[in-house]
Image (cartoon, rainbow, N blue to C red; front, side, top):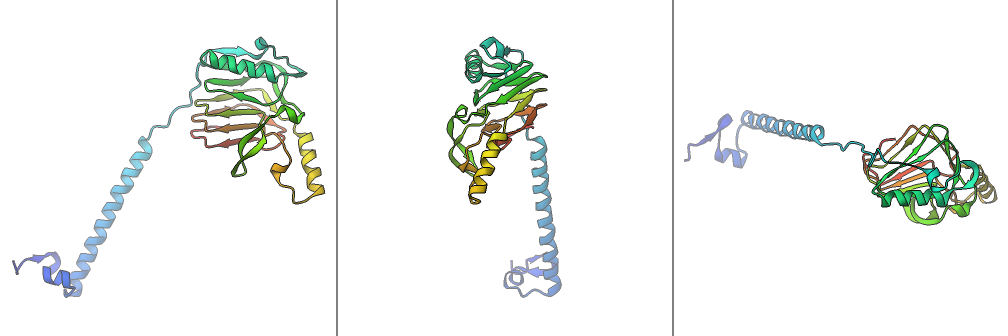
Length: 239
C-alpha cells in the first residue's frame, strides 16, 4: 500500500530514492551500525568458542613401557667405537616389533646419522652421551629441507620423518662434535666471503620433519656442526 511506512518515518519511495529527511537517514544509519556490531559479536563468540573447544591432541609416547637398550644390539659407549650400524639396527628392530623406546645408557656412544621410525622413541639416560662422528662420510647425503628449499645436504645426527607421537627425551646429552665442521666453514668464508651455508657440508644435530604431536624434553643439546634443532612441517610440537 502507498501509505506503508518504514521505521524512522520513511516511506518505501523515500527509502529507495533517498528523498527521506536527514533525521530519518540517521535513524537507519544507527540501526545499520547496531546490526554490524551484533554480527561482529556473534562471529567473535563463535571464533572464541571454536578456539576453546578445539581439542589439542596430547603428547603420547607409543609403547611407553617397551624399552630396549642400545647395548643389547651391540652398541658400545667407550667414546671411540662407531655405533651407527648398531643403533640403526636397534631402531629397525624396535619398529618391526611394534614400537617402543630405544634407551641409550650411561656412556659415550659415537655415531653418524641415525633415522628414527614411526613408533620408536629415543631416551638418553643420565650420563649418556650420543656423540656425533667428526667424519663427514658418516652422514649420508639426502634430499632435505634447508633454507627454504628441498636440496641435497648431509643428514642430521638424529633424523625423524613422519613419526607421529615421537618422544626424544632424557637427562643425557646430544653432542654434535661440531668444531671441525665450523672450522671448515670459517676457512671457506675466509677464502671466499660469498660462500653460502649449504656449500660447506655440515650435519645438523637434529631434524624433525612432518612429525605430529612430538616432544623433545630434558636433553642437553650442544656443539652442533650446523643448525641445532631443525623442525619442518611439524604440528603440536613441544620442546
